[in-house]
Image (tube, rainbow, N blue to C red; front, side, top):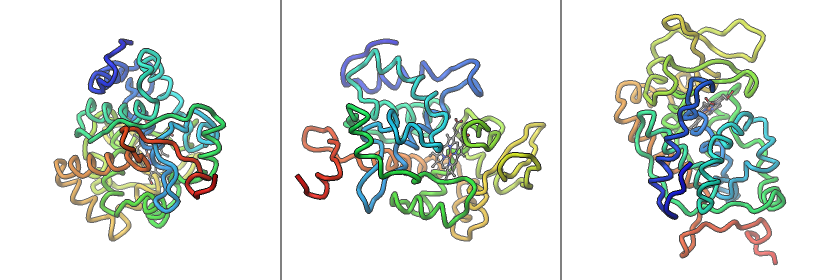
Length: 290
Ligand code: CCH
C-alpha cells in the first residue's frame, strides 16, 4: 500500500478503493463489509448515556471484538490493516468510518459527509474500561418494529432516518457462520441502489423452509433473495412503510437522505475539541470523579 501525505484523506479514500476488489471473498468485494464495519463501530452509541460510537475503534479489543453481533467484521479490519500500516498517522477509527464512506461511493452510492479527528484506544484495558457497558446495543434481525425503534431511538434517529439507513441492505449478504441468516437482499449486492425498497414492496416474501433462523425468501431470476424479520417490519409498520414507498419511487431522495443519516451515524459520540481531535473520556471523568 502507498504511504500518502499526512492529512490527505482523499488519498486514503483512493487507497481504500484499491482494496475493494477481493477475488475469492463473498461477491468479490470488500465494499459491503466495510459499510457494516463503519455502522457497527458507530451503532452502539447512546444519546442518553453519552457513550459508544466510532471514536476509539473499540472493536479491536474485547468486549466488542468478541460480540457475536460483530462476527465476520475482522475480515474488514484485516483488509484495511495494510493501509493503516503504511499510514500510521490515521487512526483506525477514522480509517474504518472513511472506508465505509469510500465503499458506498465506489459502489455507486452518494457521497457521505465525513470529518477526521477520531482517536484510538491505545490498549485493550482502556477499551474495556470504556466499552464494557455497551453490550447488546446492536439490532437483532429476528425482532420487529418496536425493537428497531428502541435501538435507533437510543442513537437519536427518526423513523425516516431508520428506513433510509436500512437501505444499506442493498449491499452484501448474510452469512450462516456469522449471523446464522443466509443470502443477499438483492440480485447485485455490490451496487448501491434503492433495489431493497423496490423488492420489499413488489415481491411476495414467504418464510424459508430450512434449519436456520426464521427469515423470508423470494426467487428472482434463479437467485434466492432474503429479508430479515426486521426488514419486513419496515413494510408492516404504518409509520415506516410510507418511507419505504418514497425511497422505492425516488432513488435520488433515498441517496440524499441516506447520505445525511449515514453521515450522522458515523459522527455519533465524536466530540472534537479545539485541537480538532476527539478525546476519549472515561466513565469516571464523565461523571466528574477524579
Ligand atoms: Fe445490516 N445486517 N442490519 N445494516 N448490514 C447484516 C448485514 C449487513 C441488521 C442485521 C444484519 C443496518 C441495519 C441492520 C449492512 C448495513 C447495515 C446482517 C448479516 C444482519 C443479520 C450479517 C452476516 O451474517 O454477515 C439489522 C437487524 C438492522 C436494523 O435493524 C444498517 C443501519 C446498515 C448500514 C447503514 C451491510 C452493508 C451488511 C452486509 C455485510 C456483508 O458482510 O456483506
